[in-house]
Image (tube, rainbow, N blue to C red):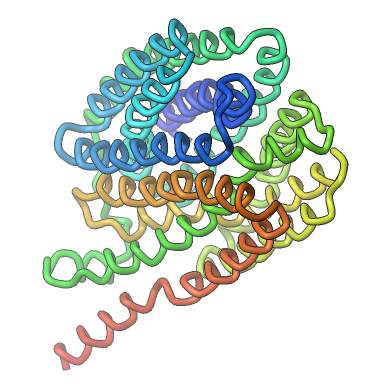
Length: 400
């Protein structure tokens, strides 16, 4: 793997360690420390993710216009400002304000990072995206494991630690990313048919396919985000400690690191069967919530986490890789921005939806509703490439 990709991977790792220090305790902090209801907590996280949606779209646009380095530095700068404010003032409503700014800044960073992987290493296919996914989850393994003990000691140190990690990320980006785009390779290894379609500038089939792919990401993220929102409060109500909750995310990250060396070669070998991969992953993720339905102690929640982790290994890395495959040359940032926005919208809707469902009904109703969402998500998995097939048929008819 090229040195440039390793620099992006290291940056992603540091970034995610910082982010995963704070997001597991968001709902608990808002509900238990700030005295707000689960509905309000969900609303705050919805606004945070909404800011991430806007940031992702702007970040993708800026990548195509001014390049990845400047886009990433801008996003890091905004996030550092928010974290500095959060470290000094984390009462109500300051927490809400700075968390929203933080979501916007982080949103700018992510599409630029993934777009740079696709542009700098086109011949790597899904390998670069899989490695970035591993880096994200190493961060998820480390961050929550630290967050639990730190939060039990003092929530103030959580915000300070996140700020320190982003300062390190700033230094990595400032010294490491400046010259990455100096010799960007051409993308002539991209599928010829897709290039022919996009070069005509008239056919929007790749964009339509991307939107369908985004619907998969959106629906799955709505359900998955419950693990970082309503699930934390629900588990504490059953006597699961904050330290044990953090340990679940450590299990998630370590399992991804352990399985990826085995899963990666298999997935790359059967890359043309990505539909089966997506459908299988969605079904496995859904089954994890069936297990949660019967969970009463930490061990069963750990089993459910193992199951959903296997599912996400199949689904999450495939989404940005598909976006990269579909993107026309010069619009890599925009396509990654759209995909990242879909995930942010899922994280925006998910906590609020979960909070309302639990407050108005109960956890059982929420869990079965999430299973229904996963069933709906299977449909776009099967038909995401229909616009491409239709475009090929029309093109052949015109040529004949």
